[in-house]
Amino acid sequence: MSIITGVPKIDKLTFEQISAYINQQYGINLTSAKLNLVENRLSKRLKHLKMDSYAQYADHIFSKGGKNELNLLCDYLSTNKTYFYRESAHFDFLQSVLDKAAPFQAYNFWSAACSAGDEVYTLSSLLEEHSKKTPIRYSVLGTDISSRMIDEAIEGKYAAARINMLPTHLINNYFEKTEDDKNQEWFNAQPAIRKNIRFQQFNLIKDIPALAMRFDFIFCRNVLIYFKEETKLKVVNEMIQKLKPGGYLILGHCEGMLCRNTDMIQIRPSVFQKPVA
Image 1 (cartoon, rainbow, N blue to C red):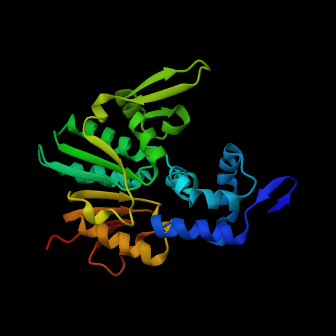
Image 2: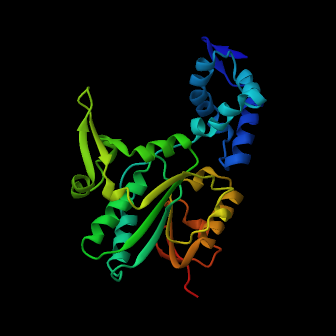
């Protein structure tokens, strides 16, 4: 074990062992540039388990007795940066599609890397608000690799700083404001935007073929950047298969090139439509 001022440092072999497992199981590409990130995120686990080195931790998680800790490894190492109404142009595009919808038209949505539910509740609040003008039917599936994020999404409770990008009228209409004993404001998602949504833990590199549902909209934004190139292309092609003809795939702004060699039609930057025929 290499130690600097008493702080354990991860050795190359242990880092490669952990990064290879994460890549194989979840498609996340932990290059050597992420070594410090792995150290920082796992340091609390070493302290909690009273271990002296990352090599000892690796021996534990890959043993029969470490299965529970191994199942949480992706939770510790995945990035969950998100907020409400992120990249508002995508939601403006959605609204332009909804404005052409016939009464009681049905839509299936998939938020494919929903983190703690910000994107799902953003979608549901917009859809519910639109339904006041033109009734529509909709369902929203939110999935994430992290079981911890899915638990937070199901709870649907957010700090004020997290939700403040959402238009004020949507906050007022669909979230209940409360305060904790430290006078911190929290916003709880209300039944109106919970009724047509569901959350589940989901592995994008393994589980897509098992999805029975077809979707009108798939939001998969700012997650594919963490995958290797061949994994990115595999996931995108499997998602295209899960789109209905005429359905839309919405990616992050750095991910649009992944549709370059497909039949998808670019509608706007990072917005692609599946041909009808």
